[in-house]
Every structure is written in C-alpha cells, then in structure tokens.
Image 1 (cartoon, one colour):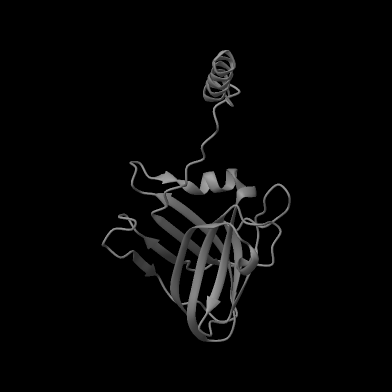
Image 2 (image 1 turned 180 degrees about the vertical axis):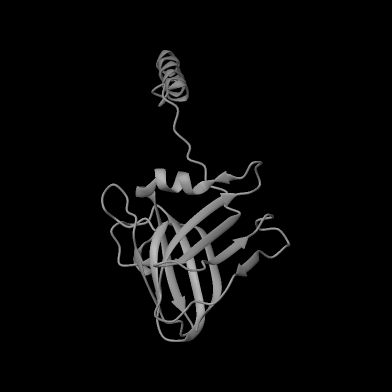
Length: 185
C-alpha cells in the first residue's frame, strides 16, 4: 500500500508540473496580419513624357459576390518604354490605407512579379530592390514590343524565396493577383 501511495504522489506531482509548466518567456509573439488589399493601381508613364496609361483593379467586397472593377485607360505604343509604378490600397478604411508603404517597409518579405500571356509582346525590368539588392517591384520599366495583344498579370508574393528566377520558383504566398487585357499598337 505504501508503494502505491508513493507512486500516486510521484505521478500526481509529475502531471501537475507538466500541466503548469510555461514555455512563455514573457515576450508576446509578434503577429504580422495579412494585408487587406482592395485596389491595385498601375501607372505606366512613357519615358520622355506623354500620356500615362493606367491599369486598375478594385474589389471592395473581397471574396464577396461582386466581381472586381477592372479598367485599362488605353493601349500601349509599340517600341515605347514606360516607367511603371504600383500603388496598393485598402479602401475598406477611411481614408484609404496605402499598403504600398508597408510592402516597401517589408521589402525583404515581398516581391511583385509581372507576367505576360496570350502573345503580348512586352519586356519588364525591376527598378527598386530590397536592402539585399533583390527585386521588390513597386517600380519597374515596361517596354512594348511589336503590335500584339494578350494579358498582363501582376502578382504580389509574401515571403518569396529571394533571389529567385521568377514567379515559377519564388514560393511564398500570393497576397494579390490581378490580370489585365492589354494591347500594343
């Protein structure tokens, strides 16, 4: 009986110490909430001046029943190089929150990718980089090739592998993806 009593006390003490142990070192874990992005606005300004082309997608209800509003202000001119800039907004807040600032501040954890499809003849090049010299993508150049049409997709990845050889091997999670129908004339 005495041995059973000691075994019960030892088991109870062991269970109590496990249940009351704390892995908390007193420092709360930082939570980096995912950005809410309702609007992507791309401005393409011809190198040397001229009328800018804007591409915008706006989805105020997120995954709600309404489709995003997608606009393209005009066609690209063949052989012209455009200076591109991207603005990301959260328009569920008043005033709208500029998410671009957060993406730039966390440049090592983000990258924008530009992909063309459907025969669209363009080339792109990154202008801005993170502190390690890896591409970020809020600023870029786009050169329109021969007359053509197709799609231009902008993808924002969170925590991609850097450096990478493009979207296909970047990894990470997609924060935003928007596709526009574009024509080069």
